[in-house]
Image 1 (cartoon, protein in one colour):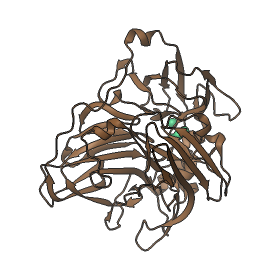
Image 2: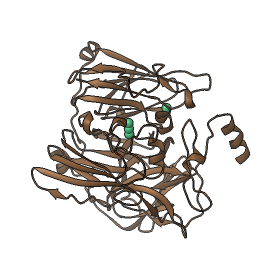
Image 3: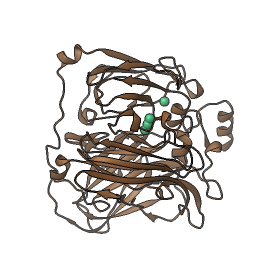
Image 4: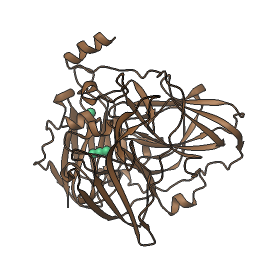
Length: 459
Ligand code: C2O
Ligand code: CU
């Protein structure tokens, strides 16, 4: 196996690395802290966020060098509220430059933390903006030119929760860490002495680890005390796509996508999450007895175990209406201008519309507040092709169709990242409410660093 991998690597071919069960004892899931603001009143919310290096106790008897926000790995949940004036003081205490990118947040490009906004070690930047979007689960990660993949792999990623009047009034699980549980899903490989070695594990078509971690915890379990549990899933991996299901194929309900609540819950037994995508799902364990366990799986690999440790409290059913989403009619959509994006190549040769990212080139311009259709084409390739998660900064979009067929179910929710299967074409309805230069790119982080990215000016 190892030798085969080495030969593939020499030829620059992607190596499929399966997740294996790590022979470490089970550990209780790490629940990230909630970031305490420096100030929080009706008019102002101020947070300090520090990127730094540390050591994390991931494996028994070893300390792993990692990085994180305000902590040694990952970071606290950053709570924002629609309508609130917000100030983020972002400090870089790493020994290399970084940026603070608020993935999914609708803020002007000056605050977006793309590759143009590198902060040198020891420096800080103050960002100020008003939260204009609805409730959703977003995330923070670094985005420095050609170093995004390495910095995320080494631990930098944190969740951002936006709340609003709608999320306040919805009767859904919202007791943080109890029945509203964040799950940042990642894969990493550890050296014999328990370290991460990004250079050694690097693959041009997406670095994969052989060990799954959730919130930085290996072989994690969670004790459940309620009958309905909301899981906020983030695929925070560099390049792995997950096919999420539960043991015994237990159905679950999806209530939110990247940028907000669905109109109503969608029942599923399986869900695909490509890198950077989020999904909020609700697991119903009211039928379980105390002592029962269910697992969340990726294929047949258990990512995490849930133990029902108390008589499931009889909770209300989920509401049937969660949100209202404004949509355009087919006639209106047919009149909109269209832009095309062709995703092609592999490894070092990846491109969008035959171009690689060039910091000094604005690939196109678009107008503020004017909806457009973006057609994204995952071009057929001789090698069979790959999934590319296509991400756009500064907005949330709607998926209109896949391969010409109008989408349904959870595909109808607000998105900022959409996974395209090989040869797939998707059409997006997209509009920008904030100005400046934003990025669009593949969120397979090695593809992004290899130039599968472009930038556009909104004005
Ligand atoms: Cu999640 Cu351009 O990034
Ligand atoms: Cu890609």
